[in-house]
View 1: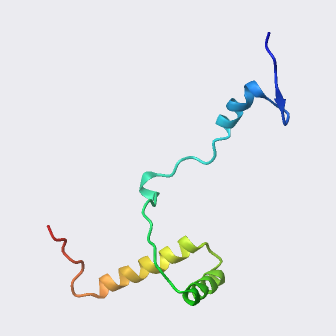
View 2 (view 1 turned 90 degrees about the horizontal axis):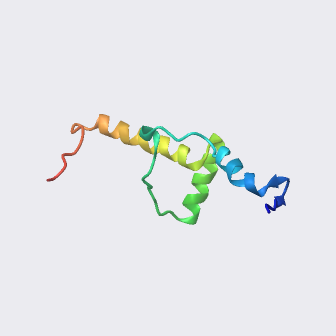
View 3 (view 1 turned 90 degrees about the vertical axis):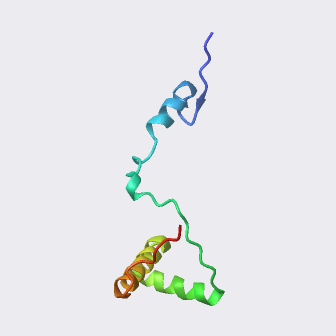
Length: 89
């Protein structure tokens, strides 16, 4: 004897198949993945200032901060007589 359980209009036997089909967006290209965090301690006033500036740009914090940091880093490297510091072995 097979018993069918219905929950929210989805038969239980089809529940897992439905969830597998609704897996979400396709995976990112590995070159576009950002798997390293950069944490910066700030004061309450500094955070308030950053949030105010970020709101004016209408972007999420990570995208906003990433562009500013990377643009400044690249400018400093290009302006420096030493293009990049040597790694110590």
